[in-house]
Length: 271
Image (cartoon, rainbow, N blue to C red):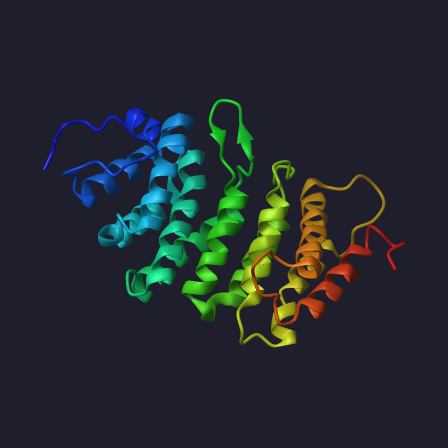
């Protein structure tokens, strides 16, 4: 077992081979600490890439819950990059557990969901990119986590749909400039893919959007409304074209029709 400092630049340059004689608990600790860094090379290029690969390959199976707990704690972190990368790590953890089974308990997933659901619609810094911090992508990373939670906790699907609706209609948000609308649309489509939702359940969450848009009139479009319309347009495309290699949601046609009803608010000329 080695105690020598890990040379992360060399690990990255070598294609992320798993360091020899380094316990998974140490790797989890170092990766968790690096994912808080304000240096985008340390956080994104090194830690995030290594964590995603090693989780997918099963290298960190023994410490998945530890990684998830540390990620969930960061939703209350004072620095945006720490908060924004927490859901991305949770998505990796939940996806690995879904693929293998039994690596994460339902109690752990519920614990993480409680922290995630409190954070996601309330996050104020929704910039996709910052020139100093690099990628932040709280909205996109949160969308990925929402889709992963839908598989881990199928009983939360209707809540997750409403959570995404509250995120897209949140006032004070930054304009979606880095394809956040597409990531939200993909997540919504994946939540809707799961069997068990009837047509009413698959469309009910759009009432959150309709309520937010009610009363809009002439004048400039607020940023949150622009984000909402962009996401609805992207969702309609996902529902009608589908996601490559994946099943279409059972009620895609009904959801798409309701989405078009909402898009007619700014685009009254739609057929």
